[in-house]
Image (cartoon, rainbow, N blue to C red):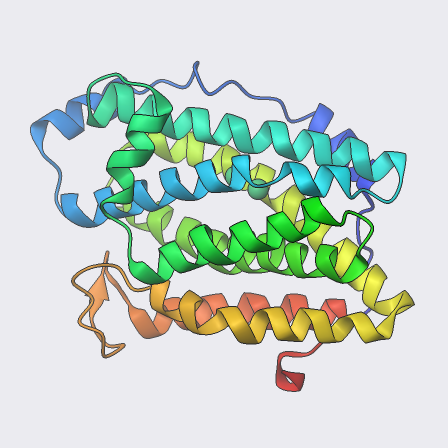
Length: 277
Ligand SMILES: [Fe+2]
Ligand SMILES: [Fe+2]
């Protein structure tokens, strides 16, 4: 196994206590001015915002089953913090929609509007695969294979492969163009939280596959099911579909390479190499 010290849930919990932030105190005044004046690539930025809004709503409301499936008190404690984090992320995106993009409204309305923007592949991942994996876990919290499938989907696919890739390229673009500084600040704090969540997911999967090698099959089956939709959902509107089109100054091939590189590294740590799929 790879030489690496992974953080256990108690360490991640202590880190959470030191990392509190408030989604309502980030300064969005320059974002508001810039948005009102009209920004370039507005359609792609809106697509990205819509995807983040829908993703955080799903991720927040389809999580409690995992808290109920905890193994130890330390794990239950960490998972409770993750649930709070996800709700905080949803609140930040909703506030951004309220104060920068649209008129103030309830979170459900923002999500409803954002839903008209996302792709069928994205909907498949968040409305079908995630919902089913969560329902299975709620129905059988002691089913280890169901927990492995859920964490593979949630922490490894959604938070790592999709989430880290989106963060990397969206913030690179906004920083390069000096756009939406309040959004970048909030999104970066969200990213720090996500790093803890992913740390938990990798810790859990590695430990589980180490103790119960047959669980590697559940990791593989989940990834085989989902990876085609993940590749499709990384393609925003206007990309052209041939892998060479540029969006926010980056090619689709570069995007996929980044996503796959991260997934490959994490799977090596977990002990289920991508090549074994
Ligand atoms: Fe989140
Ligand atoms: Fe997260």
